[in-house]
Image 1: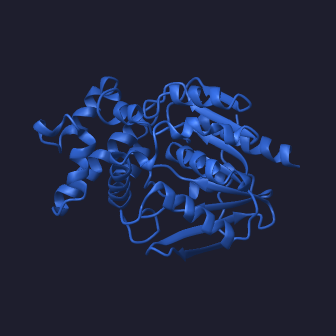
Image 2: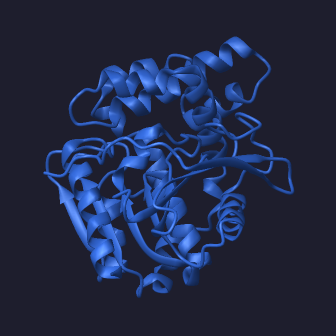
Length: 316
């Protein structure tokens, strides 16, 4: 079973500024002359970590990571201003041009798979392939499952902590109720709600409990950005038209693609990966039988690194 590559440090890190007031953090690791790959983190609002560098052979990949608007090291922290899916796609294009990259491999999980698909459908000619994990189509039904009625029946104990910050009379629309608090003036209520929202996701992300992952999601810096930005995106249907990602898959049929999904993913149920695989029949679709949602569960890590190694063989 494959495990993460050894820890590495960036050979370059910096910021670039957008025209509408954001400063986007990015870094490069591995081989400056290697195969370009961009790591697209989840959330939206999750940010990157040093562990995310380790899915790629550093001798052969030029590994690019960036923190999307409002999260991680990007500034202003937690900002919802001009923060849309289309803006994130533009940021990726700005970064690609800045780094003088013609094409790059997209590597994204959860919301990272969402943004990867949206970017690839907009800029197919700039994509050399896609490795996607924990597919999130971001349809209303997918949001309803996790934030209103679905996962609540699998984790009824965790659900009680998630609904606690919301007045009972407002619980018929949890996303909207959270959004009101997370964008409201009461700083204490905002932080309390942000932790509850974020911890709910952390608790549900692995098949076996992972206290360290939950601790990460509970960190105030992480929780505030993730909760605010996710709620902002989700009350706006992630700025997509109906079934957009599935309907536009015909643009992607010539791209080498890997789809990796945990059988017991409670954050993004496997139906989403199955539907995507039907639209992309050429893709290598791997169901990990003993995993949930997290990229760091052993079976999912193994399949992801197998895919990054396979892509190198394909592009040699």
